[in-house]
Image 1 (cartoon, one colour):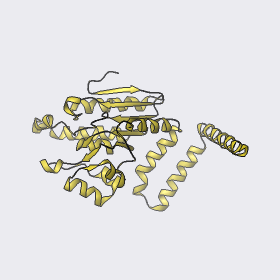
Image 2 (cartoon, one colour; image 1 turned 180 degrees about the horizontal axis):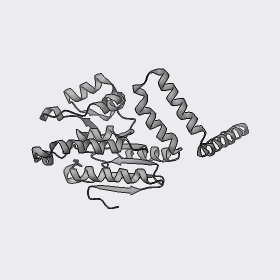
Image 3 (cartoon, one colour; image 1 turned 90 degrees about the vertical axis):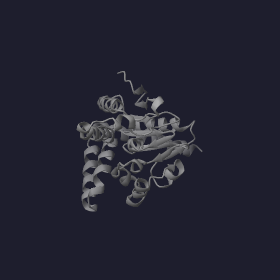
Image 4 (spheres, helix red, strand yellow; image 1 turned 60 degrees about the horizontal axis):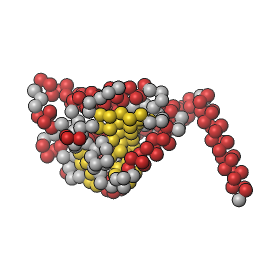
Length: 259
């Protein structure tokens, strides 16, 4: 499928989705939101796709929402506009398949939100994350950030609005990996291939559990996770994965004995 504001690059086991509005620093327009929503819906339904990389390229991830477009909104369309933002972010965050954000350069405002909607973030050493929305009278998206870095740090990042670099983002647990700019995509693709080799239903279970258990008490969380384990353990596909894993362990033990 051909899109105007994004590029979809199918790989073996995963797909790479690249934001493609270079003249606007990948600012998120209505059209881009609709295309991302449509694209993620399609990739989620494609059994050949087991993981997704979302990136803006090596030098800029996303400068945020398209402010020119936003400022021209008539009052009658404001509510629908922001509900549309909620809808496309939910499409990405709720994707049953793992989504990796590969962030090179700036991820500001809506671009920061887009990164935090993903499951994992690989950042270039040149990456900059920031929420400048309060400076022009809008509230930053708070809850996804709070779930990742905690209440105090989320308040600092959203209320003060000072940008942070990749190493600080790694220190506070916002990103999972930091790599040199020329290696960022290779790191993201390595993770995507590793996730694509996992049992899809087990990956989906981890995503569902991570969304639910923070709202449960210890006992309820344990019950939920063990029920999920039992469901996965009974599947035929799981048996094949476990057979392969045990065979690999056996071969590794034999090779160690040789030395």
